[in-house]
Length: 160
Image (cartoon, rainbow, N blue to C red; front, side):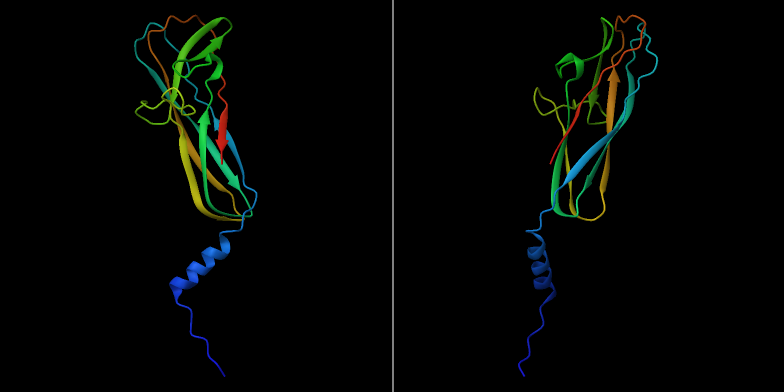
């Protein structure tokens, strides 16, 4: 009877990883948001109004390995990243959203000197991966704004 030598642990892991590598299941990612709400604004104050919101990304697949994705934001109603605007009828109020708490990196799509979130995960089997990202908002002080309810909508784009 011929005996087969045992497989070493390092080789066994390599075989497992190679066996899993070609497995590709459909990946589905979605997002949910908690908006940045600035509250009341005093146009006579020079102080910035800072607040946060969040974007939660959920990715689901039967089996996935080494998945990466990006989270990008649109310009909103202003059509430009340089200065986003909330609208109340014909009136506008400038604001900006950032990827960092220091509010130095404008969250966008990578164009016009903006940044976006790049993330991912190593391995997922049957259970969703959920990650939450903070959106740092700032409403600059001393804007000549009329009374009203101001609103803007940003589109979240997840690329994977």
